[in-house]
Length: 440
Image (cartoon, rainbow, N blue to C red; front, top):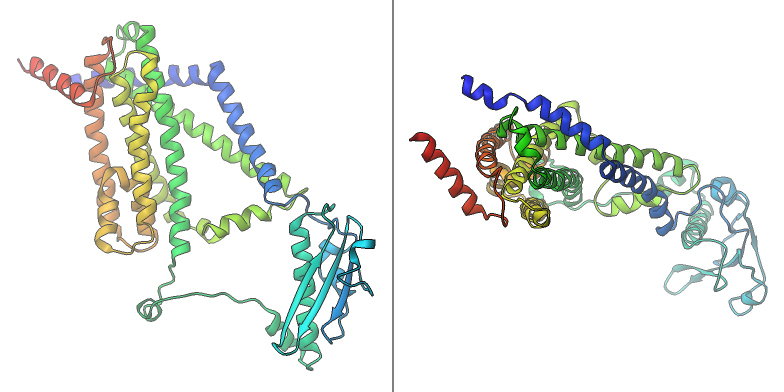
């Protein structure tokens, strides 16, 4: 018991020392500030690229309309119903498609509403100058507003009552289901499943990837600077590695939390000056909707536990690969080994997300490398039960325990090692030899 206690003594000291050094270090501070700045700047940049330059009033000053539909349309109602065009003038004109270019300004639009009587269809065609003062999204919104006004005029002149008008003008959703899904009242669809998996997996891969790079670098820096030899006087190697891994995990969590906070604050501030809804529309196109984030406290707890277990698993794996290195030139190759394993888990989770096989769901939820990405999401969408989720956690805890033991052994045996990076097999062989010597 005392021997085991000795192994853990000093973890708190190493944890506090390493975390303080990372928070005070110039390179860490520069990285922290840079990533927070990039997270904040990404919102206005993405908004500009996607065409959301300006929210509020449109830069279109006038819209000239040639109405060849045969319906009487009150275009003056458009600014009243669409605040975006409250400073835009709408008027019918004698211009045609052949003459609009002679008088049209850079902030003006000519729109031709046509009706094909034989096909019984309507066409909304917009014309502008080659270079305009407004964005393409504003022109699209303008054409859409005119199309809706035309639809309203058609129904109104058929003597439709106000409640009928509201019903006819309301939107609708399209959903495709199999017979089995319909009668079992399942609500899951491909977009929802893929969206939930994507959001959670991206958070997990960011945590694991960041911590991997920092842990590997931190372990090798100490060995290369021979600081580890000095620390061995008062702290056991196992405690040294464990404290270091926990400190890096804390730092990376702080870093990502800061980035998330900066992004959220930037989104709110940018929304006051620009149309950030374009980002939301882009996310919805990828299957990531607001429904993905509407989770209960119990579900949030499940996601958090799975994320922490996976985070610890891959962090320990980083410590293992970093222990076999002694030079800074080995950082990239050691980190790449961890990243490849993380990416393998991520890709398996993403590829299998739409697949609704119970056997496959259980397999990817129980294997430690993929369970961090798959188990909580598969439980949320009903592919596995609570028992399988708990079993997944137990397997992860056992795997973490094994990694703790292996990492401690390998780090202790190779702490004074100097030379080229040791391969996986050689590291395990060195650990077994050390164990055999201790047994004798």
